[in-house]
Length: 322
Ligand SMILES: Nc1ncnc2c1ncn2[C@@H]1O[C@H](COP(=O)(O)OP(=O)(O)OP(=O)(O)O)[C@@H](O)[C@H]1O
Ligand SMILES: [Mg+2]
Image (cartoon, rainbow, N blue to C red):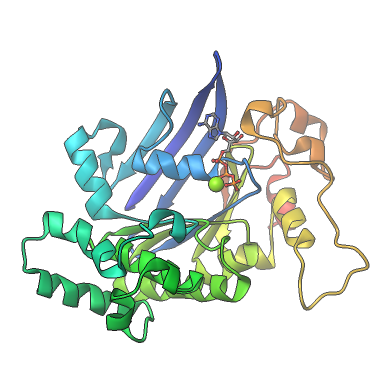
């Protein structure tokens, strides 16, 4: 496993209390593999990615293990951490406009980081970033390099941000809802680009989204998070065709679809719960239509059922008995 997270718990200080945001997350991403992390707002997706880069808010308390290529991220020195972040991880942000200096040309933006660590002449590095822009689907890299951010569309700028993330040849791309600030067509294009990069460069990808359809289209596997826990993880196609957890079933039924017509969209009853407000037992129990007495008493552990991993007391029964 390139990335291996075991029993991650993240608690953040709010006033005098520590709030549990990530309650128990274990997941692995192999070399060249992509995993989608899906879940409603507040389920702990972003804090899980911040634990990977060790960029959690000040005062955060972390337990469990995050390993990258066998190395414990929690045990890295500041110096190791800095080169780990720069060389191994490519971050793709939700809103590229917020991360690209508006008064500098794209060429300067793309070269500034590289020039610090790469001693080759500027012209060589400029050619390198022009090639990267071409690789991410920008037809006229020279023109793009000479532009200012406001002269580019949101989709173009997202491609520039992806080129920037690729410039240090990372092994893992972390895309935290990089697509939600974009319109749906651009969103699908960018997601497709991430998939191409994964295949072409053998990159590992962690793709965070609310959109199960998009997750299934571009990622090998999908993990579903609820109240700071992974409740189900399966190969994306299998999850899509035969969701096992009642929460995943609810998510799939409540999403709008162009192939299906409803008088009203079915919605999941109740509202999502953050981990620190989760009741005893299974955090989804209060909203679950298949709830049993044990569900309010014991947290179901994440267990393997063939290719699926599932945290549900229904166990194999949730998968139709197989
Ligand atoms: N600095 C902070 N201190 C304390 N609590 C925080 C802090 N930042 C976020 N939170 C809390 O963490 C929870 C959100 O976790 P996280 O950002 O990982 O969710 P998410 O799954 O990424 O949600 P979204 O889909 O909205 O991005 C919320 O309950 C929020 O109030
Ligand atoms: Mg988030």
